[in-house]
Every structure is written in C-alpha cells, then in structure tokens.
Amino acid sequence: MKNILTDDFLIDEIKNRFTEKNNQILQLSFELDELRKKLFDSEHLKTKFLSIIRNELKNPVSAISGLSKLVVQKDFDSVEDIKKIMDTIRLEAVKFALQLDNVLIASSYEGGDNNLFLSGFDLCELIYEVKRSFEDEIKSRQKIVETQMDHEIKIYADREKLKLVFKNFLDNALKFSEKNIKIIVLKRKNSAVVSFYNDGYEIEEKNHHRIFERFSPLDSGLSRKYSGVGLGLCVCGAIIESHGGKTDFSSGQGSGTLFEIELPLDDKSQGEADDIESGEGFIIL
Amino acid sequence: MTDRIRIYLKTGGIVFSKEASEIKTILGSCVSVCLWDFKYKAGGMNHFIFPTWTGRGLATPKYGNVAMEFLYEKMISNGSKPEDLIAKVFGGGKIFASLDISLNPGRQNILSAKKFLEKVNIPVIAEDTGGTRGRTVIFHTDTGDVFVKKN
Image (cartoon, rainbow over all chains, first blue to last red; front, side, top):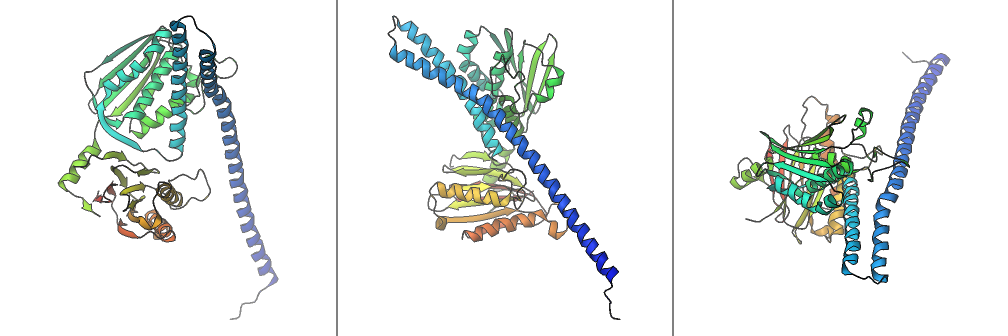
C-alpha cells in the first residue's frame, strides 16, 4: 500500500522535531548555566586565592628583602645584632617555604600528579626531625611541645609528603595553642596514629565542615589574627588520603583541639616486589 | 639487584623518571601506557579512567587523550626523540560483564591510547589488554621490562 503524506502527518512530524530540538536547546542551556556557575565559582576562588596569597607570600619576601638591605647598609655595633636580624630572616624564609610547598603540592594534586614516592622509614624519627626544624619557632613563641611515642614505628610511605603534613600540623598547633602542644604517636594493629593536641581556642561547630576546605582560613577579613593561605589542612587531607589513611579532629569548649592522622602500616608494594623476584604470578612483557 | 626508586602510580596520575624506578599500578577498566626510550633507558607511565576529555571539568590526566599527550610531552621535553620511543599498553578489562559492548569503558580506553600512539608513530611492542580481570602492572624504567599479574 502506498503511504500518503497528509498535512496532519507533516504537522505532527514538524511538531515532534521542534519538541526534540527544543529539548536539546533546553539541555544545552542547562549545561551552559552549569558552566557559567562553575566559571563564576572558579573566578571567585581565584580572586580569594590571589588576595590571600598577596599577603601571605608577599609579606615574608618583603621582610626578607628589607632586613637583608638593613644588614648590608647599616653599620652594626655588635655581631649579636646582626645575628638577631639574620635569625628573623631565616624564620621568615622557613614560613615562606612552607606556604610555597603547600601551594605547589595543591597545584600538583589538582594537575593529576598525585604519585607517591614510597620508602620505608621510622615514623617517630620523622616526627622528631619535624619538631627539631621548629625548635627556634617554639622557643620564640614560648610554647611547650611534649612528645609521647613508641620506640620505632616502621612505615612505608612518601617521606617528603608526610614531612609536609606534620610540618603543617605543628605549624597550626603553634599558631593556635595557648601554651601547650602534645604530639602522640601510637602503633595500632594495622595502622599508626599521630595526634596533635593544642590547648588553644575551640573551633566552633558551625566551622567544622570548613576545616579541610581550600582557601578557608577560619579567621578571615580585616580582623585576621592568624596568618596562613588556608591550604595547609586541605593539602594534608589530600596527602593522607592518597596514602590510604584518614584525618579526624575534635574540638571542645575549654579542652583545646585534637587532630588525629591514621596511616595504614601494611606494605602491599613490598610484598609484590618480592613476588617479582620469585616470578610468582607475573609475566614479563 | 638494581636499587630502584619505588613509585605507586595512582588513578589519573602520570610518572616520568630519568632515574631507575619501579612504577606500580593496579588496573581494572583503566588503561596504563608505558612509554620507554630505548636510547636513554628512561620511561614514563600514565593511568587513565576515561577515554576522552569532553570539555567538562578540568582537563586532567584521568582522561585518555590528555594523559597520552601529557606523557608524550614529558618524554619529549626531557630530551627523547619520537623515533626512540616504544609503547606497551595494559588494562582496559571489562570488569562488569553485563555492560553493553558500546558502553565498555575499558575498550574505549584502549582505543583512545592506540589512536594517540598511531598519530605520533610510536609502535606498540607489547600489550596485555581486555579480558574480565584486573591487573597489577609494574614497570622498570631502566630496562623497559613490564611485569603483569592478573588479579
């Protein structure tokens, strides 16, 4: 039988096609709106980042360059005076290096470079090393840092990245504590737990969700009391997560703040390296 | 025994090493390509989840076309010549057997890698792809050897 194209059929067909195209346009406009929102968010984030970074990275550089100029130009009476200035320069440089490390690690994680350079080492020794690197700052801020740890906890992890994590936690503890900081390292069955306790002010519950967010220093604006880019804990969270560990914290009125970092102790890669040596289950290509 | 730097390559990551390294990764439907420079005895590896970046989100190396380009550029910017490079391709398993062939992400990932390698004229000299099982892949960047185990 021959199909006859009636006017009604053609109108229906046009209507269907129109509805289809209309839906496609709606979908595209929805996607465009999503993109616009993302662009707006990223623009906002960029502005926020630039404004924080302008102060946090520029201030130490200005201090370093100003103080160095002073050392070069001024005639000092004693070597002690020069030493004092040089020590301030060194402390500013240490602060700057930590902030810069955070920015670089954050950008490499966001750029897909989340690889871990694994090696076996003693976790307690690393904590001591980090504490030693802060000794001058601890003294100048008149804080007390107490450590409590097992003799040796062998861990298989990226030493440099974990060092950055512990530096950030100790730096935060020094900033926010009243006087006392306690670092406890414990070995559990399959994990190691590193706790950083400080007797500083309580983190309000409404701010708990912001703790590990990017560029969200808890005190912002003109009344800012503490320095920081607002990247430290976010970077720490990402590094710990990439090790298969987790970070937790608790903060209560009058009892200070406690951060707990749990890292797995099992060394899967070691086991498989042994497998390669014995050739078990592997084919070589 | 060579003392190699041991690196765990995570999903969406890229590793290039001039020094003798042992790069390890675990694959399901994801694909990893090992590029090796037989002249400089150096290599790199990627690990991607999706075949192509479609313009949504950031163009990170979790997408095949981005990951292949990044890895290739890393090798070239470190002094490798395209004619000195060889490739080995791994992964792309069909982990969920019920998936329709057109939706098989593993297969699309393999095609994405091979399409790029063909474009830049790098020969694929070994591969262990497809199937229904995951793989552990370990790449020795100094010898170009790749050890594969089905999980």
